[in-house]
Length: 329
Ligand code: NDP
Image (cartoon, rainbow, N blue to C red; front, side, top):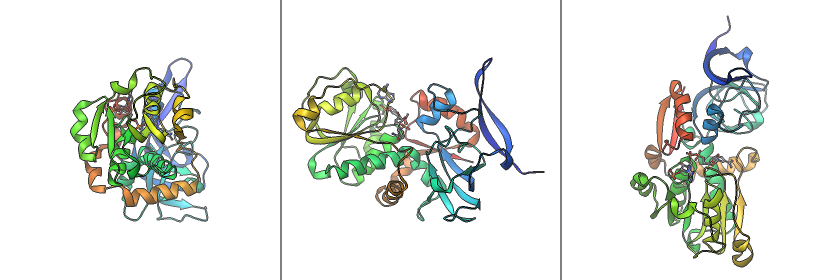
């Protein structure tokens, strides 16, 4: 009899809507792919929360195994780059959305989607970073490419106590930036200072409708929140600055004016992690291995067993998760 493993399966029916269950599957149940990976660790991103709660149409094929991030060991491969025993990471590429994802003992995927696990990281280390952390790195790289280096002035991080935000605060502080952390959870101020934030501001300072231009407060920023918050961040960015936008925790809208762009030469840098080309991913993971202070990751990440993944998905959408969650299989 084929060996089985536990998986989370999202199904949908006209009658019952969406349901989420733990099931036993075998490799025969998995989708097409040229590499099979034994999943050793995964995580819960905001997007996984949306998929499991059904609050946004993240899942585009049913049934679906959710989970957009995994780290593990190759058990079988017909892809030229990978062989049995290789340790790998996968972020995005539609995994957990259109292709069976990470919340299962095994994943069968395209070898083109995988990047090698950096030698200095365990699967749990990589998942403490996950898509959220790798996206934070993409944001930092975009700011750097735009010349926003520490000497240019302060940088703001919104949604700072969340996954993207926490890693962004930690990375930027470690690279020598003076970081302003915006959070709705003042109770997390000491946590954010521990990660390296120089100043903590309340979420409400940025969440109301924005004026076209505000006082220049920072040279750049990483925005995980969107909507009025991003509009305010832009309006308060100093001449020639840039803001990397990656998220929509407040909303997908952008009720802003063009004033920061045409009067201050501010740039808005769009960040997508899901379809980012492999060269950028390799650069980002190389930088994460080098530039992230791993001693801070213990404060930033908590570990939960696979059996708690559904509750954690509900918690992240409700804004109850601090930093990052590692799911051990
Ligand atoms: P988290 O839930 O961990 O973090 C989001 C944070 O945003 C919360 O912790 C909270 O921070 C803040 N927040 C939540 N609701 C609101 C609100 N109504 N108004 C203002 N702030 C709010 O999620 P992730 O870090 O995993 O993801 C952050 C965002 O980035 C999500 O929108 C996600 O979809 C997006 N994302 C995009 C990617 C891409 O490729 N572009 C990749 C990964 C994520 P605090 O408590 O500090 O205020």
